[in-house]
View 1: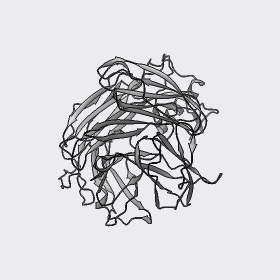
View 2: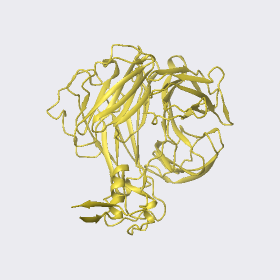
View 3: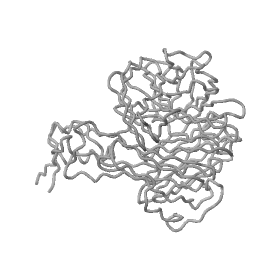
View 4: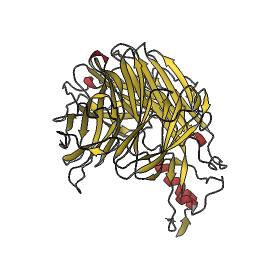
Length: 520
């Protein structure tokens, strides 16, 4: 028998392929040593997907794309590192050949054998040229397509793109913001709706060269809703498919949890929610099911806050509901506990819970040692009467090492930082502007059990928009979100984006023993 030893570099490469593409060079550009491989290494490749912005001809969409600068000494590249590139291009907006997946304007569209309406253009819509400097692009009208893109080399770690759309009137009125997401196979969206007056679409985008097939399950307050979807929804390669939730079931439900999974391939998924009286916004996926959920950044002037939670496992969840404000954590009177039955969507009206002070909602097990995984989101309303606007805050993972929110403006950006456990110190870096300005950096301390709502530092001489990067320096985990406000004709238009860890690095563990294969 012949024994063949697998090299440590090959093992590291295999691990990187599982967890994300990682650079196998250390900061000085040399080959990694055994000890070096225990360190976080920058990813070499990452993908982002942006949904089609709007079907309204009044829509004005602004893209801001950004890759944070590497730490000093981390910019040199190894000989085998991929080239630097970060581009988003138009996908092919299509309709799968099924009545279950109508186009967003309600009209059936033909597709060729591959399912594509027409090939995507070659010219990128937005492209980052160097780390640390954001770039922007704009488009108008209701024909703007979804975008698919990939970043490689030094532009891959932490690559972030914000899509912000303003619609002045009509059923899609509002400020719609979304952080373009990476592809995956499993998404949870508590907070969607099948109520009268709501039109919610799931946008599915496939970045790959092969087709994907997605399933959509709907869960109401009494359990899983019966749907007409049995064969899955085909999402052709490089294309995007909008699916109107109300076409999937004849049942009505005010609060619905949407579960998107893929049978084959992977997709990006996000829900566009439109209310005929309260405007519209994007509902991003909740963090993965967990025993504790943190939903940061409820605006101080919120006039209505609706909590929606879902327990996907076999056990019911009993949750303690707390609000972390600027001075500490309280339990809202009358809403101390929330019982979530297994497989059923639970909701509670928290009214104007913030009482004029920005805060974050924390859901935790009511009994210690009995943590049941849940997903959760908030539907937030600002304004009153015919001057209302909605936004959504899904549960989010901690900032971790670093997270970024792009498309911040000189006015109207608010950063919310919540430390649900121990106090923490964070560094907030405002990038240069898309058209000019000097980087600004400031350090903040977030007290334990509080939410710190701040106006992030603004670059001196700012022209255009800029990105805000949050880094955890010490202490416990920090959960964060960024609110962007743009008032229009007395309507307090706003949108909230959470800031989970950008996963710009991957840890390749040190091999403690000789790994080998046996070969006859």
